[in-house]
Length: 340
Image (cartoon, rainbow, N blue to C red; front, side, top):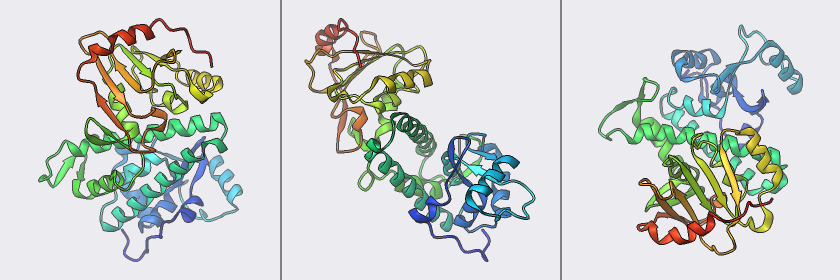
């Protein structure tokens, strides 16, 4: 960090003006991020270049001449005049990765501010999804779930290391100071002050990550029993392996999942084998059944619908004796297809 450069104060209004839509995704530019972190653009890019193996194309890319010109015209700015190279754009995943590259107290403070603001923006989108078109909300939901998975992977690399170890080797093979990154992730993941958490088998877990952990256990089949399904019910299933067959049993109470949403999801993820059947009006609670009637069978009792996970205090608990549910699950398997 350049001591002569003062880091910019981060707030929602300031950040809003620094997020651009390029190549269909929201990004921030290197010069703006450098200002936030208190670097010159040159020094900021040097830090990134020294860790370039961490920034793949979906984390960072360089703008083309045409993209630069379009952005200049849209924003009536000539602030890039004199730059030798076109700006680099960072996706949200790339900004999270910056937290493993930029060191020091100021970097931690600014990273926390960015994470809080991104979270606030996503909460607003979810709370006001009725203001968005179905397809726009689908894309936003997909991106949010992808970012959640990236954060979960990053946190796993921390939890696998003893607290007494000063440094860790991250998943990309570089040394990261654990204390710096851990403070950021733990602050972001405190369920006492953050929305989006639930209790999974007695432990607080980020809601989307909890469902992904459960679904990742499946080798053959997943049954989701839930009368109150929605678009997010599908989005949380998007990373299930191709060889796993998914069946959602639901009466779609309130008609919250629409045919257009289901078709868009199937078109976006043709390798996700998901079918819809009615639940027959006999279920009040929600359940997830993994690998039914196999040695790997697991049944989870869910306190809320996955589409509402984390919005209020809720619990998911593994059932100790799944055999007691077999009779009603066998009835489900004979139910007709659900028509949206």
